Image (cartoon, rainbow, N blue to C red):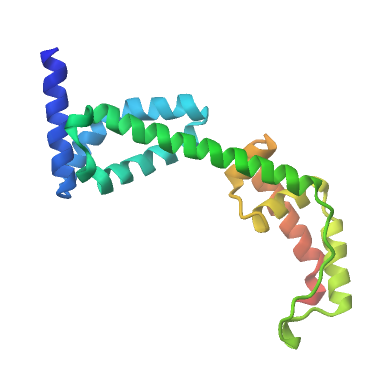
Length: 190
C-alpha cells in the first residue's frame, strides 16, 4: 500500500511539473504510463495503428490539461486512463459514423456531373465532361470506389483499407493504378 501511495504521489508531482511545461517530467510520466495506456487502447480499438494515434492524442491532452488534475478526485493513473478511454470511445464513434456514411455512399445513386456557377474559363466543355465520365467509367469498380473514398470522402488510405476490410497495400495500389489509368485516358486534354 505504501508503494502505491508513493507512486501516486510521484505521478502527481510529475503532473504538477508538466502543468509548468517541464519536458523532463513529461518524458518520465510517458515512460511510466505509455505501455499500459497503449495496451488499453489496443484492447478497446482492436487496431494498433489507431491505438498509436490515440495515445499520441492522449499525451498531448495530458500536456495541455495537466493543470486540471485534482489529486483529491483520484490517482494520476486513473485520470490518464480516463482520458485514454474517452479518446478511444471518440475514435470508435467516429469509425461507426464513417461506416454509416460509407454505407449511405454505396447506396446513393451516382450524381450527374453538373458544372458549378464558376467563371466561364473554369467550366469544362461537354466533350471534356464526356471524356472525364468515360475515363472514370473505364476504371474497375474497386479502383473507382477507392479513388472516390480518398478524393471525395477525404479518407486516408488506412481508413479506406479498414472500411473495405482490405490490406493497406492493396488500397494504395488500386488508387495508384486508377490514377495512372485516368491520366493516360485524359492525356489529350492536358
